[in-house]
Length: 163
Image (cartoon, helix red, strand yellow):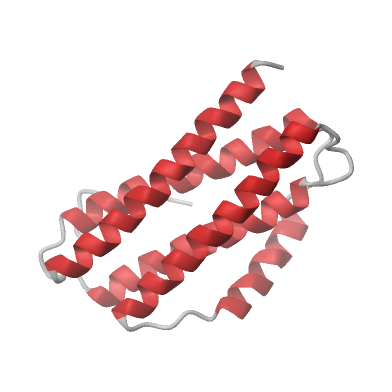
């Protein structure tokens, strides 16, 4: 996946809605991936708790992004996204061999999402064709979500360094 080119502004609300829908997919992927990582091979209660929290947080982030897309006036086929993402996770994300591998996979998801939101925030800020109120609401939400992602990445990195 490539990041949004932050040197280029988001040109329209339609494009913003599409970029937010990519965020919905990222969060759905993170949610499905966390659920998959909660295999019986992960027997550490702390790691299971971290994955459970990540799953719940991704669900909340996805819902917030869907709400933003709908505020802009676009629709999101959540069921279709969920089905497609679940198939992709099942086909491409192996069950972890243990707790550390599960944490490394989760760390990857947190960093990917944070990076995407960083780029999207900058592209939104550069936008001159979208209503300032809309941009403000979107950026505020994206900053909160991005901060959650990086906070979780830092927590996971700390857990990994202690093992």
